[in-house]
Length: 321
Length: 274
Image (cartoon, rainbow over all chains, first blue to last red; front, side):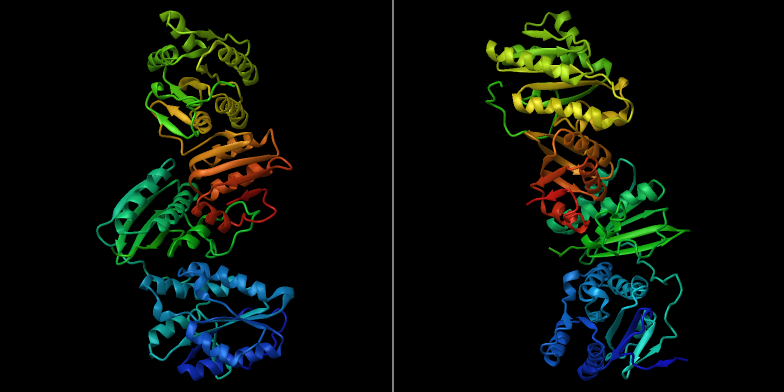
């Protein structure tokens, strides 16, 4: 049973982060739901940040001619890796929420443009992590429009699990199927494609790792600029293995479709799911390795448990020649 | 200063043998006792071939000169305190000035280094080597530093090698980075600065910032720097008050990582210039 809540034009101080999934069908429903949400915000003197696909941006701009409290941002500037999105949203919301002003975000992911099953899976995980990332942000809330026109109930159900509220008919309901626990139910990683190459590493092997990755990535068609980024990312993850993951690890590389993958496994455990998803401060001593990997790679998959250790997959686009 | 014709832009190189030394080189030579003498002998003998005055400090070169009566103009410096780099440098500079007057092309120094600093005091050791490197860069002299591996901790030697632009011997391909003088208060860095050499990099940069408030680091030949390397750089800049490091010539990936790492702010005393 779900509990229906009235619209809340102004949020009570100390209210938890509200993260609503808004399944809609067609442009009219998209517009009515998002515009209601925006107008509620404006009436309460809240700022609004909108990051939706280009066609939806045009629709909303047409309805909100010169509304200075509403900022449109290009979500694609954060890049394809969902691991970068929390930091991007955090920056956008902070910029608009100066002085403690409440901010509402509207973020629609272009789900049908997901590049792979792995990408789709990480996009969903990102939506779930938003609840944790912004849990303490009592002045922020977010609406996630979702085009449900294709009647894909499985996709809708998967996404519903990542949102604590569902937005319907101008109201939101608490979502019974939301995954409230500490542990997220990850999709299993696909088995590596054949042929793959494998290398065990320990202290003193960073150069050898970079050399192996560079050779395999070049063979797979990874471009020069991405090779340089991948070298840094691989160095960071292997360093984590050596320093925090039992002192050694295993590197595996392979190419799949138009993607080159590096998988690094070790016996360490990353207890904080937010590691690497927030922008580091200049005075911060460590904690930049995973952050750099997320910022430099086209996709990063992380699976870490105390029992099975950590597996990190770095994806790089490799246009087929 | 000697005539510096033939001294090109300094760059890091691995030398198969000492036959390949060039003017302005500062070479790290890690030797095992068994295979050192022939190399020393050849290096000293080449002094005559190239018209260089040979300056020998330590027993290895001394034996080479005295035992074989090599046909070369050699000066053996029997210094009271070989550990004192300033004393050694003063003596070598005197010989260099004399060499100019005497019409030599250059001086070639063979200096056997002895471990004098406390274990772990890498910064002091590196500061001494950087002085030698500055001397080689400024004067065009060839300086070969001999390190008997049995007398040194392996990790200390790894650090020391990083502040020699050239190296000869079995492990000449390492370390990952090298730092060397490229002018007054200007140091070139070559290679990769990653977590495995970040401690050495930190010590080298600290040593460079001891004598002057502003240091320039040329990063033209730096392939990449990781998070540990960037932290080492910032830490070195912050360890003394009023220090500033200007990094120039960094490639796109280095500048991107610097920005991503959150260091591109005014309160970080390292400037990543274009």
